[in-house]
Length: 146
Image 1 (cartoon, rainbow, N blue to C red):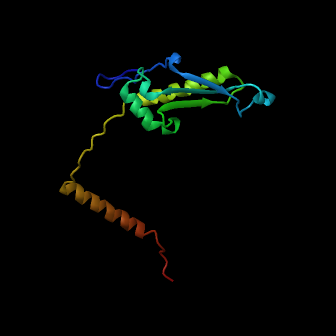
Image 2 (cartoon, rainbow, N blue to C red):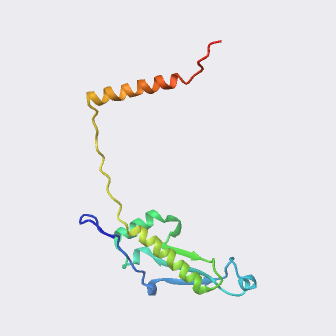
Image 3 (cartoon, rainbow, N blue to C red):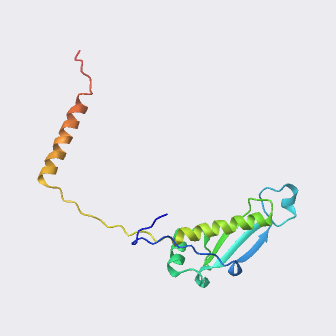
């Protein structure tokens, strides 16, 4: 992929797994009788304000983009319980977390509002076009006078 010199490619921020808190609990997902006896649900969390491995602007965008994943204590939480094993759910939760962080790492473009002033000729063309369209539409009505 080619990037021009004035646009930087999106940053890839790797999550240091040693800074994540991992909790396991019983899942309500698939697993048959295993659901009642094996803790397959995985919950990954980290405190955003303490995440020195995340740049400040990414932390702010993460808070803005994913408020539903953040607790009052500023902890970012991702849960997975879709699979039958802890390992699969851990991978799923880690993948979701990486996806959220990757989206937050993209710096939004600043939009420039351009002002457009319509000249006399453009105004005449616009009004003429509107008159013609109005005439065409008025002819669509009933043509038969009974």
